[in-house]
Image 1 (cartoon, rainbow, N blue to C red):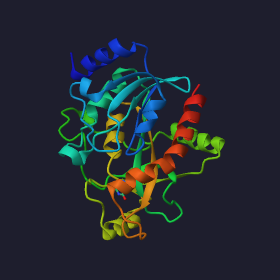
Image 2 (spheres, protein in one colour):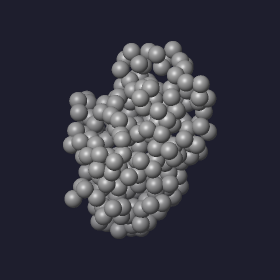
Image 3 (tube, rainbow, N blue to C red):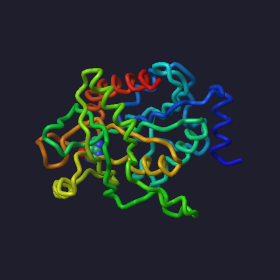
Image 4 (tube, rainbow, N blue to C red):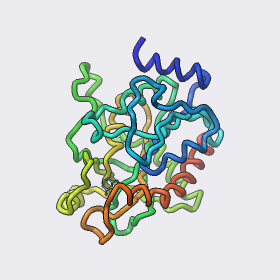
Length: 267
Ligand code: HPA
Protein backbone atom coordinates (compact mmCIF):
# COMPACT_ATOMS: atom_id res chain seq x y z
CA UNK A 1 0.00 0.00 0.00
CA UNK A 2 1.33 3.50 -0.77
CA UNK A 3 2.11 5.88 2.08
CA UNK A 4 -0.85 8.08 1.16
CA UNK A 5 -3.25 5.08 0.97
CA UNK A 6 -2.10 4.00 4.46
CA UNK A 7 -2.75 7.49 5.78
CA UNK A 8 -6.15 7.64 4.10
CA UNK A 9 -7.23 4.44 5.87
CA UNK A 10 -5.81 5.65 9.19
CA UNK A 11 -7.72 8.95 8.84
CA UNK A 12 -10.92 7.20 7.74
CA UNK A 13 -10.70 4.81 10.70
CA UNK A 14 -10.82 7.84 13.00
CA UNK A 15 -13.04 10.25 11.06
CA UNK A 16 -15.27 7.97 9.01
CA UNK A 17 -15.06 6.95 5.37
CA UNK A 18 -17.53 9.43 3.89
CA UNK A 19 -15.65 11.31 1.14
CA UNK A 20 -14.63 14.92 1.77
CA UNK A 21 -15.73 17.52 -0.73
CA UNK A 22 -12.67 19.75 -0.56
CA UNK A 23 -9.58 20.70 1.40
CA UNK A 24 -8.58 23.98 2.99
CA UNK A 25 -4.94 24.78 3.70
CA UNK A 26 -4.55 27.51 6.30
CA UNK A 27 -1.67 29.96 6.12
CA UNK A 28 0.29 31.94 8.72
CA UNK A 29 -1.95 33.41 11.39
CA UNK A 30 -5.04 31.74 9.89
CA UNK A 31 -4.87 28.45 11.79
CA UNK A 32 -7.85 29.33 14.01
CA UNK A 33 -10.27 28.46 11.18
CA UNK A 34 -9.51 24.82 11.92
CA UNK A 35 -11.40 25.34 15.21
CA UNK A 36 -14.57 26.29 13.33
CA UNK A 37 -14.98 22.79 11.90
CA UNK A 38 -17.18 20.31 13.73
CA UNK A 39 -15.39 17.04 13.41
CA UNK A 40 -12.36 14.95 14.25
CA UNK A 41 -8.97 16.62 14.73
CA UNK A 42 -5.83 14.57 14.10
CA UNK A 43 -2.46 16.12 15.08
CA UNK A 44 0.10 15.94 12.26
CA UNK A 45 2.37 14.02 14.61
CA UNK A 46 -0.11 11.10 14.46
CA UNK A 47 0.19 11.03 10.66
CA UNK A 48 3.51 9.42 9.71
CA UNK A 49 5.26 11.35 6.94
CA UNK A 50 3.22 14.51 7.47
CA UNK A 51 5.46 17.57 7.65
CA UNK A 52 6.02 19.05 11.05
CA UNK A 53 4.70 22.48 9.97
CA UNK A 54 6.89 23.93 12.66
CA UNK A 55 6.54 27.61 11.75
CA UNK A 56 4.86 29.58 14.52
CA UNK A 57 1.41 30.92 13.69
CA UNK A 58 0.33 27.56 12.26
CA UNK A 59 -1.93 24.98 13.90
CA UNK A 60 -0.50 21.61 12.83
CA UNK A 61 -3.50 19.32 12.78
CA UNK A 62 -5.86 17.90 10.20
CA UNK A 63 -9.53 18.41 10.96
CA UNK A 64 -12.12 16.35 9.07
CA UNK A 65 -15.68 17.44 9.52
CA UNK A 66 -18.46 19.73 8.54
CA UNK A 67 -18.23 23.42 7.72
CA UNK A 68 -21.28 25.20 6.31
CA UNK A 69 -22.81 21.86 5.34
CA UNK A 70 -19.82 20.53 3.40
CA UNK A 71 -17.52 17.76 4.49
CA UNK A 72 -14.06 19.31 4.47
CA UNK A 73 -10.49 18.44 5.38
CA UNK A 74 -8.79 21.43 6.99
CA UNK A 75 -5.01 21.49 7.16
CA UNK A 76 -4.32 23.76 10.12
CA UNK A 77 -0.74 24.30 9.06
CA UNK A 78 1.46 23.84 6.05
CA UNK A 79 5.12 23.19 5.61
CA UNK A 80 7.19 25.49 3.41
CA UNK A 81 10.08 24.94 1.03
CA UNK A 82 12.29 27.14 3.19
CA UNK A 83 11.99 24.87 6.24
CA UNK A 84 14.00 21.95 4.83
CA UNK A 85 14.65 22.82 1.19
CA UNK A 86 12.05 20.44 -0.24
CA UNK A 87 9.64 22.07 -2.74
CA UNK A 88 7.49 18.89 -2.65
CA UNK A 89 7.03 18.99 1.13
CA UNK A 90 3.21 19.27 0.75
CA UNK A 91 2.92 16.39 -1.73
CA UNK A 92 1.91 13.74 0.79
CA UNK A 93 -0.82 15.86 2.45
CA UNK A 94 -2.26 16.71 -0.98
CA UNK A 95 -2.13 13.06 -2.09
CA UNK A 96 -3.98 12.17 1.11
CA UNK A 97 -6.57 14.87 0.38
CA UNK A 98 -7.13 13.39 -3.07
CA UNK A 99 -7.38 9.92 -1.50
CA UNK A 100 -10.04 11.22 0.90
CA UNK A 101 -12.14 12.03 -2.17
CA UNK A 102 -11.66 15.80 -2.46
CA UNK A 103 -12.55 17.48 -5.71
CA UNK A 104 -10.08 20.24 -4.95
CA UNK A 105 -8.35 22.47 -2.46
CA UNK A 106 -8.47 26.09 -1.42
CA UNK A 107 -5.10 27.41 -0.31
CA UNK A 108 -4.71 30.43 1.94
CA UNK A 109 -1.60 32.38 2.80
CA UNK A 110 -0.24 35.58 4.25
CA UNK A 111 1.40 37.85 1.68
CA UNK A 112 3.00 41.23 1.13
CA UNK A 113 1.24 43.64 -1.23
CA UNK A 114 2.86 45.31 -4.24
CA UNK A 115 -0.23 47.42 -4.90
CA UNK A 116 -0.92 50.63 -3.00
CA UNK A 117 -4.67 50.05 -3.48
CA UNK A 118 -4.35 46.70 -1.66
CA UNK A 119 -3.24 47.67 1.87
CA UNK A 120 -2.65 45.57 4.97
CA UNK A 121 -5.91 43.83 5.91
CA UNK A 122 -7.02 43.32 2.29
CA UNK A 123 -7.63 39.92 0.77
CA UNK A 124 -6.71 38.89 -2.78
CA UNK A 125 -7.93 35.91 -4.78
CA UNK A 126 -5.12 34.62 -6.97
CA UNK A 127 -5.95 34.89 -10.67
CA UNK A 128 -2.53 33.46 -11.55
CA UNK A 129 0.98 33.21 -10.17
CA UNK A 130 4.66 33.72 -10.99
CA UNK A 131 7.12 31.07 -9.87
CA UNK A 132 9.90 33.52 -8.96
CA UNK A 133 11.78 30.81 -7.04
CA UNK A 134 12.51 28.70 -10.12
CA UNK A 135 11.93 25.64 -7.93
CA UNK A 136 9.40 22.96 -8.80
CA UNK A 137 7.90 20.17 -6.68
CA UNK A 138 7.72 17.84 -9.71
CA UNK A 139 11.44 17.80 -10.49
CA UNK A 140 12.44 14.13 -10.55
CA UNK A 141 8.89 12.88 -11.13
CA UNK A 142 9.68 9.89 -13.34
CA UNK A 143 6.72 9.88 -15.74
CA UNK A 144 5.36 12.19 -18.44
CA UNK A 145 2.67 13.15 -15.90
CA UNK A 146 5.20 15.75 -14.69
CA UNK A 147 4.41 17.98 -17.70
CA UNK A 148 1.43 19.63 -16.03
CA UNK A 149 -0.36 22.36 -18.01
CA UNK A 150 -0.62 25.53 -15.91
CA UNK A 151 -3.03 27.54 -18.07
CA UNK A 152 -6.09 28.19 -15.90
CA UNK A 153 -4.31 26.46 -13.01
CA UNK A 154 -6.33 28.70 -10.68
CA UNK A 155 -9.73 27.17 -11.36
CA UNK A 156 -11.84 29.74 -13.28
CA UNK A 157 -15.18 28.39 -11.98
CA UNK A 158 -14.10 28.37 -8.35
CA UNK A 159 -12.56 31.82 -8.74
CA UNK A 160 -15.82 33.17 -10.15
CA UNK A 161 -17.69 31.53 -7.25
CA UNK A 162 -15.28 33.04 -4.70
CA UNK A 163 -15.70 36.47 -6.27
CA UNK A 164 -19.49 36.05 -6.13
CA UNK A 165 -19.23 34.93 -2.49
CA UNK A 166 -17.21 38.03 -1.59
CA UNK A 167 -19.74 40.27 -3.36
CA UNK A 168 -22.60 38.46 -1.63
CA UNK A 169 -20.99 39.06 1.76
CA UNK A 170 -20.15 42.71 1.00
CA UNK A 171 -16.45 41.90 1.35
CA UNK A 172 -14.07 43.69 -0.96
CA UNK A 173 -11.69 41.12 -2.45
CA UNK A 174 -9.03 41.99 -5.02
CA UNK A 175 -7.83 39.61 -7.71
CA UNK A 176 -4.21 39.47 -8.72
CA UNK A 177 -0.94 37.70 -9.40
CA UNK A 178 1.00 36.10 -6.54
CA UNK A 179 4.76 35.64 -6.83
CA UNK A 180 6.46 32.82 -4.92
CA UNK A 181 9.68 33.89 -3.24
CA UNK A 182 11.59 31.03 -1.61
CA UNK A 183 12.12 32.74 1.76
CA UNK A 184 12.83 32.52 4.59
CA UNK A 185 14.47 35.94 4.33
CA UNK A 186 12.09 38.60 3.08
CA UNK A 187 12.62 40.28 -0.29
CA UNK A 188 14.86 43.28 -0.89
CA UNK A 189 13.27 46.50 -2.18
CA UNK A 190 15.08 45.88 -5.49
CA UNK A 191 13.48 42.43 -5.77
CA UNK A 192 10.08 43.97 -5.11
CA UNK A 193 10.66 46.57 -7.85
CA UNK A 194 11.66 43.71 -10.18
CA UNK A 195 8.54 41.73 -9.25
CA UNK A 196 6.36 44.78 -9.99
CA UNK A 197 7.85 44.98 -13.47
CA UNK A 198 7.17 41.26 -13.90
CA UNK A 199 3.50 41.85 -13.09
CA UNK A 200 3.15 40.60 -9.52
CA UNK A 201 0.53 42.06 -7.18
CA UNK A 202 1.49 40.15 -4.04
CA UNK A 203 4.45 38.14 -2.80
CA UNK A 204 4.75 35.23 -0.40
CA UNK A 205 6.66 32.10 0.53
CA UNK A 206 4.15 29.32 -0.15
CA UNK A 207 1.15 28.24 -2.23
CA UNK A 208 2.71 28.00 -5.71
CA UNK A 209 4.23 24.52 -5.19
CA UNK A 210 0.88 23.39 -3.79
CA UNK A 211 -0.96 24.73 -6.85
CA UNK A 212 1.43 22.76 -9.08
CA UNK A 213 0.96 19.60 -7.00
CA UNK A 214 -2.83 19.96 -6.92
CA UNK A 215 -2.95 20.25 -10.71
CA UNK A 216 -0.59 17.26 -10.99
CA UNK A 217 -3.07 15.32 -8.84
CA UNK A 218 -5.93 16.56 -11.05
CA UNK A 219 -7.61 18.52 -8.28
CA UNK A 220 -9.19 21.93 -8.70
CA UNK A 221 -7.37 24.69 -6.88
CA UNK A 222 -8.01 28.26 -5.79
CA UNK A 223 -5.97 30.42 -3.47
CA UNK A 224 -6.58 33.55 -1.40
CA UNK A 225 -3.94 35.79 0.19
CA UNK A 226 -4.44 37.91 3.26
CA UNK A 227 -2.26 40.98 2.97
CA UNK A 228 -0.26 41.44 6.15
CA UNK A 229 2.12 44.20 5.01
CA UNK A 230 3.19 46.35 2.11
CA UNK A 231 6.15 44.61 0.41
CA UNK A 232 9.74 45.69 1.12
CA UNK A 233 10.50 49.31 0.28
CA UNK A 234 6.86 50.25 -0.22
CA UNK A 235 6.12 51.70 3.20
CA UNK A 236 7.76 52.61 6.48
CA UNK A 237 6.15 49.54 8.07
CA UNK A 238 8.75 47.10 9.47
CA UNK A 239 8.46 43.64 7.89
CA UNK A 240 8.80 40.63 10.18
CA UNK A 241 7.19 37.26 10.89
CA UNK A 242 5.83 38.72 14.15
CA UNK A 243 4.18 41.50 12.13
CA UNK A 244 2.75 38.92 9.69
CA UNK A 245 1.16 36.96 12.54
CA UNK A 246 -0.16 40.12 14.18
CA UNK A 247 -1.73 41.45 10.97
CA UNK A 248 -3.16 38.17 9.57
CA UNK A 249 -6.36 38.39 11.68
CA UNK A 250 -7.30 41.66 9.91
CA UNK A 251 -7.85 39.84 6.62
CA UNK A 252 -8.77 36.53 8.25
CA UNK A 253 -12.25 37.68 9.23
CA UNK A 254 -12.98 38.64 5.60
CA UNK A 255 -11.47 35.41 4.34
CA UNK A 256 -13.63 33.37 6.68
CA UNK A 257 -16.81 35.10 5.47
CA UNK A 258 -15.92 34.44 1.83
CA UNK A 259 -15.00 30.79 2.44
CA UNK A 260 -18.14 30.11 4.48
CA UNK A 261 -20.35 31.61 1.77
CA UNK A 262 -18.49 29.69 -0.94
CA UNK A 263 -19.10 26.41 0.92
CA UNK A 264 -22.77 27.23 1.56
CA UNK A 265 -23.34 28.05 -2.10
CA UNK A 266 -21.47 25.01 -3.45
CA UNK A 267 -24.67 22.98 -3.40
N1 HPA B 1 7.04 38.72 1.61
C1 HPA B 1 7.00 37.37 1.59
N2 HPA B 1 6.17 36.65 2.33
C2 HPA B 1 5.31 37.31 3.11
C3 HPA B 1 5.29 38.71 3.18
C4 HPA B 1 6.19 39.45 2.38
O1 HPA B 1 6.23 40.69 2.38
N3 HPA B 1 4.31 39.04 4.06
C5 HPA B 1 3.77 37.87 4.51
N4 HPA B 1 4.37 36.82 3.95
